[in-house]
Image: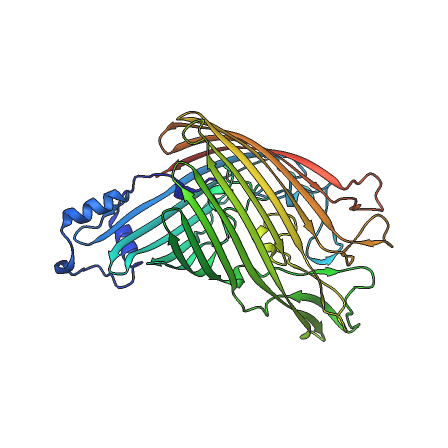
Length: 472
């Protein structure tokens, strides 16, 4: 997806914006000690060299930016969802399997709208100052989206962090991600396997560079980024035992309070490209929750350790400025949030009958690969195309039905998506895009409705989007 941080911008300064930005910096107020500041010319030169503006009578550099965007999409009737089209939501003849809760659960879905429109606005403010500890940086970014209401949606916080020397503290992109290897396409989609802009969460990160081309980052990141449900076995000998007196049964991971441990090794060379290897450890801690006599009653508990790996590559091609090849591969086991836009969302474990064996019967496995190619035909016209493939495997304990109701089998889902788009920039920072996507979901032999003749286990859907973005 298009990343606004990669673009150059002009940064208009307002009095209100300046005051708001100053409070982001620890230890810096509205009245700086002028006796300790370098000459104003030195500050201006340093700020302009970084593409920023100078806050008058301070040693602070700052900039404002963002964009406004309009999207209009034509969507196939089986592509369920609004303003966010992902292959995991494609329904097969109006039917799909719920990937969480008691499995199997067949959902009947349909859509009436085939044309959808929305607008989006994003603003961010950044301030920097050089100190004896290195550059101190603060950044806040907010976003609002509206598709139909008079007053629009509220602003949501995308980024809010401080960088102090080698440390990053706050909410921003997960250390796991490699944004450079993500394909370029319009905002409503998350292409299968592309997690390059998937996760922003609170973290403490330390980054160390080695020479000019290598860096290593280590972080602890908030495990409450999401609270994924368990996939509960619904058929066969592994079905959990629920007392007859219970009126409700669920499995929750709210017991988890251990942060994720994430590491990334990155290489980058100007004019050549970049590559990254990442790894993450994630603890799964789940507990049964029953409702008996109208009161919640805790049940059995179990834990497991999940992990994720990423390999990303982005190469600048010699065919022209801006031409790029990308390749991104992921593997997760019990850490599905690192591939949350693939089938299964962030469901991480399969929960079954407790007893002498563990309640967590399987850690859900996901793997994906996505690649793209971008070519600039002229400085103002470019095209991109690519494809992604993923698999989500719920294990071998019998989480769903295959064929007849008496035959339990594992839920194993494949997803495929291809896309192509053309972009035109008639003026700087203004982009028109026409983007076409085809997605397909395949339940690999699982019959979504055995009692209904003609229901198949695979479905494809087309979608197209016209997008206009103005950056500032």
